[in-house]
Length: 134
Length: 317
Ligand code: SF4
Ligand code: SF4
Ligand code: SF4
Image (cartoon, rainbow over all chains, first blue to last red; front, side, top):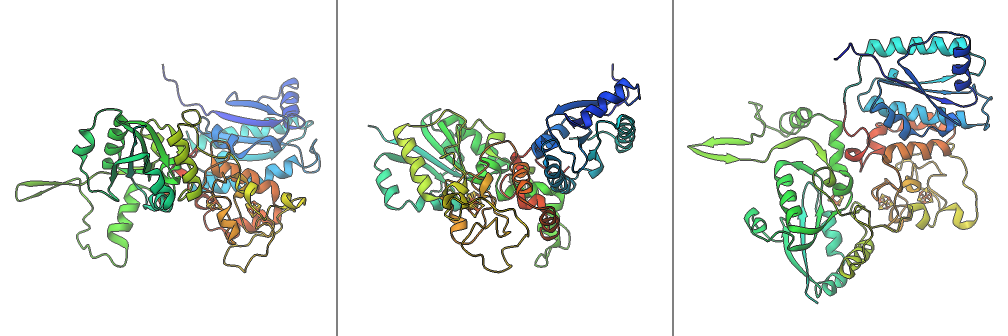
């Protein structure tokens, strides 16, 4: 049976900050949409542009989460992520994909509430945009 | 030893790849002792579909196809060629990755036809007639191949045994490949015939060759902005894609002050453009990234110049 469309949202979260924030959101029982699936990576700098594009082939939105500037466990992985992200986003726009479908956020390990808020907001945005059709 | 039966077919390409074969000059003449050319159409011999169709299945030993696939006719010939051939090689950037014609995938079919047949200043077409696949003239039917909605690389249409990069492949590399084919010393099916090295590896500008450490890229320069000096082009801000490109050309472009544009194909990975972003952004400062976004009119076209049809997002959505 085909139900109503539900977004498929993938969050690629760095182990040291955003993933910890997701964990905290869970422990503190801050609700966020079940459309969000999290993939844990060692560092946002580990997120190769290829991962983002590959993910978008099966998802409606991708969010990369890393540590706040200056807080990267590996010193500058998140700066690298930010530079790559800018370029990839420009390329996706040229490919006809709405830039809002990809998002980069710095969420620290203590920001459980913020994690849940960002997820709700992102879910709403993707619902507004509708399915990413290939 | 009986001669190797060779076929060459120009699909949606420019014949530059075939020129690279001719550039083998004496080497090609030597190779002809071992090779019999059974089909070199349309560039050299005017053979018809039926000449190819009449050959026995798998009677051609090696077929080189250069050019991408854009028309129904090309798909038709390539499919017959596949049936008649033991080893099918995607020869050059267009066949292996879609190449420059593949950039058309940034536009819709209608957009391309309108530009070509209606909007160019030299076009006189008041009725806005576009190419038809069939047209009736006094009871006889004239036909034209269908113009597909997208450009494809060869392996997106038929099974391909080997890939050779380059736009066109460097003639020294062609010589190596032809020799490997004659001797039957080929890598596993489905591979690229390549040294596996990057352009930087063979580039005399490479800082590593002088024992130096790469400097970060602090500014971005287009090729029209001045003449580069002897050091690595990328370090000077010329956006050279040598680090992520297969270097079977021996670094031809950087040798003559031109940054590599990636015609050799990706060193690794599925998506050349994404790989290039990964490599460039890791070497650039934040300011240089902003400058790049400002100076390059289309980042997508710049980074997928030869590989859009085989990239993960292979046409404009
Ligand atoms: S790869 Fe380059 S040289 Fe070869 S057919 Fe295509 S455009 Fe021409
Ligand atoms: S980046 Fe370009 S110029 Fe620099 S070493 Fe590599 S191929 Fe040569
Ligand atoms: S340097 Fe790059 S663009 Fe130039 S021939 Fe070699 S692979 Fe192709």
